[in-house]
Image 1 (cartoon, rainbow, N blue to C red):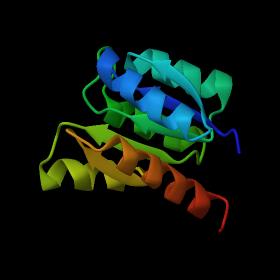
Image 2 (cartoon, helix red, strand yellow):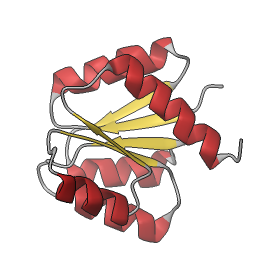
Image 3 (tube, rainbow, N blue to C red):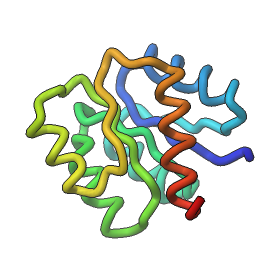
Image 4 (cartoon, rainbow, N blue to C red):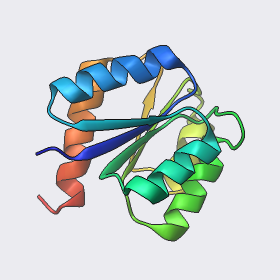
Length: 123
């Protein structure tokens, strides 16, 4: 396996939880804490999937998603405290492949990462 997952979230505890569970599941995890850093890391490291928060300093997750979609088809899972249906719809319309709301189950995150990666590689 050893796919690279980029976690972009400004909350260190969220990054740590994601890293711990994803690494335990066999993934390599990269992290960024701001929108611009997340975008730069995505361009530099070409991850297999990005877990992206919406509320980020510097550049929000929707703008990061919009920019990444113009450049690549890397799968994106939004992970955010914004639970309104309109927020979910905007995220999905901009190209997110899945949407998880905080608080979240780390085991569910791992399962969704695996599911999105399976779809991305066609089975």
